[in-house]
Length: 312
Image (tube, rainbow, N blue to C red):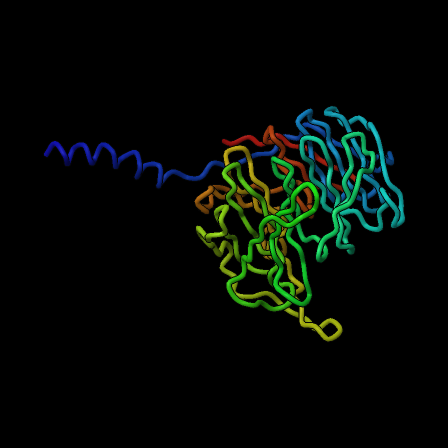
């Protein structure tokens, strides 16, 4: 009888928590950069914040890398259209380490490296264009390298651009572009992948072992069309992923979400859906900084919004 009572005492809180509704997350706007009335931004595509809360963006229409302080005031700009050192043809992804900023090009297999003053330093050649990129502690870069001839791979580069580790995340050959992913890593080295053209979210440990795989929306397949001689998917399921400081995943949905390119699904590290928040406007990406502020797009890229996330 004593053991039964102890068991029930332990079980009741568990059952209560399982039956509790997920918390709702609300966004409180704290900062806006760029508007129709100024030329701060023309069409930003990548964003990152450093430890001093400076904000950096890549501007596709301005062919530049820009820096703003924590209050959103313009600090510096670097780059112009071209293919020389420090120049861009189509700047896209952006991340930072303690010392450097890393910028990818949309159509070129290269990562361009700048210091925090936006001075060009050097470049890292890749085996193909970057599908996604994250700067890690210790000087490592994790990059999804796209290829038309083989499976996309997650590769880890050291400071000198040498590959030190690879993750082959597809168990079997896939159709063209179906292995395109966005990804993020937590503090324990676990890797979270969201597939851009499939209803699939996965978690791997640092050694590449799959921990779980989840179909979030109940989709079987997306529409594919023939472009030139290739059959390619044309409907984006998930657009981006970011992790907060508690290790929760924030996955930006695409065409199949109730609010297209606005719904963000919040999952626990175990893959349990906790909540769904909706951005005020459509966005191509999301970013969460070290203070758990969320950044997204407004005015089709002319404006960058920063939000405080409040759970109720």
